[in-house]
Length: 336
Length: 163
Image 1 (spheres, chains in turn cyan, brown):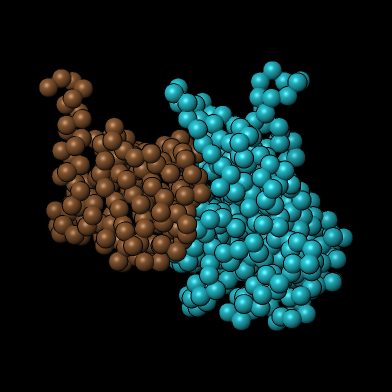
Image 2 (cartoon, rainbow over the protein chains, first blue to last red; image 1 turned 45 degrees about the vertical axis):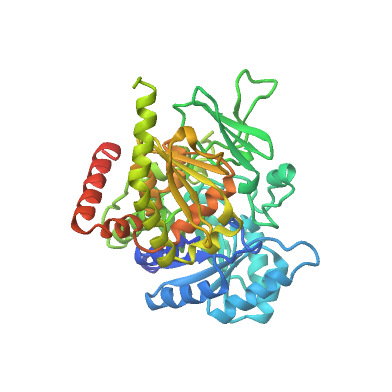
């Protein structure tokens, strides 16, 4: 258990070079980021890195003892793999410490062309069974799997026993209950793909409208997906977190998910004990303020646990979606 | 002067008073942080209306590096914006400086946005990639009094909004 505890890495998000430096300075063991294109699942306007910015970011992170993980975690459309292969070549040339991939073709390319760089299996691959994870390990040399957020801690403990690679779990941010890498809701309304274009609810299709009484509606591609009364907290304008009317309900309700964030601060010791190697903080689309606050809070908590102290759990609810938090499936699968 | 005319006059006077400061601030920011324009992409020519709700005027920003525009405008004379960003003055200032998180302010309903959401997202990401504090750079332009005023505003904001 001691060796596992000493390797509880903190994997932190960076949407910009300034956010990466903020994460490193706040105590990140590794920072994950992506290029300004469809090769990553946060292909948002004004976000992400140019190759030149990534080169400087790698130098900065390495100078402070932190790693840089490059997210290439979308799926190339059939026959259009050049962008992903070029991104992998660029990342390897710039000295990133690992690639986070979901697509088997991208994984195979990197395994063949850049075997010296670690491969991490993205949550976008939705590999949650030992059989699936072993397949990626044996076929492409995957060294770490980012588990979907649908397993209880006893299930994670069991998976750990049956796979030959490290486990990374999300501990804060998006609740992410969908079968990740398979969601087509955005595509259905906007024609753009979360999984191939890297855009969930593209900002160009989002519109907020405010009524005279203060009610705010959020729309995607002209479809209203939620209305918030003046006193209600809001969430992201994603279809999965919209409220809908259905024949068997008298009022609109969250048919898929609620706007709520995952926060596993209180479960860190159990996760470490279950064999989790690395803890991931979601939020490359968030600000430096978020990165600074969340990373420093979890840095302190992990350090406290490593030192055998009770963890100092900062109150992070103000940074959560809908200003609500949950331990989700990690605590129980009966949370709804 | 009736009750409706007085605020309108006050607003125009306030705009006139602060305009030299705004022009100076936006020119300085553009000189010191040229990289932020790349993140704005096609929205360098978007008209942003930034509305600090407790001030007597709004702010019109068009972040075109070749023709920067940042001016105070009376609300009743504001242009039709491509994107509107509304909130309390100090919240907006803290967002510019990445001392507050824009998504969290949106979730709490303290921040209101409308119009072109992509324009808002690009501006947020561009400003978030700026190292250092634009507010402090602005305060520094006025020396000790400027820094004292900023410190007082921040203390007041922290006490009132963050408890």
